Length: 80
Length: 228
Image (cartoon, rainbow over all chains, first blue to last red; front, side, top):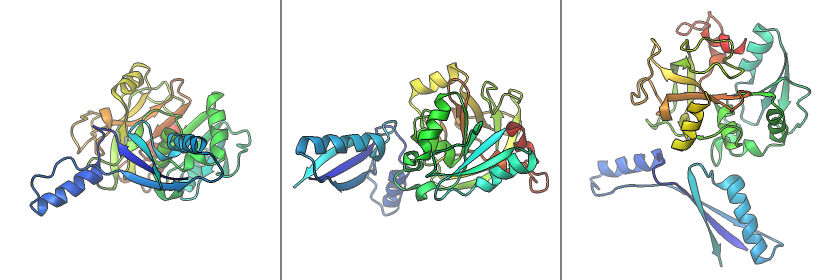
């Protein structure tokens, strides 16, 4: 099974990278661009487990390591 | 006192910590590689500063999975003393031994400079010998030092005297909204916190780099006081 994990900062959490990108775009006169937020995509494969177990293992990995629940949300997508 | 100094791949402040405890305070210091799980009966475990695992994923995130952290957690849960400085503080937060997280500095720059920090609570092992309101001048060197926690967590910390240091000016004045004083934008200008019972302490500044009058042209040796 192949998965993509999307990790995003929760609303309201300062995103300095997003702010830097936004200010760079302003310098290029993209004045209408707002609220640039940068997240992370993690791709991984799970071997030797059934579909449900695999997904629950990915969920466990997200909570353990891939996302910090204090500041981030995560979403798990199955990839064909 | 026996002091275990944990070294992860990318840790780079372990010799500064060793200099304080072994060189100046004449305590026994044991370096512990992060793959070891034996803390050798240490009274105090120090997670020094640096860039463990190259700060990959999030600062401190991978270090929390190192085998030694199981022992550090057990030591802390049994009431043993744990001190995390800079990256060590980030690791303690990631490991859940301290609440909150360290975000990128509000000014989007790596900050390497002297700061002042005020002693807020003397309920922790690291500040018990200090005077509330005393100002320590010492360096910071970090990109992710912006302490963040949910408002409810911040209230908890305040209520139980777990805020141990706040960034301040030279006279001890704290101004959370002034980035010339609260240089990284930390919530409530928090520079260091402790666990509820005061046995686990984490801080972003480096008092261990301000322990020698010889090199402390700004801070003098004021960083030594909390280590005593």
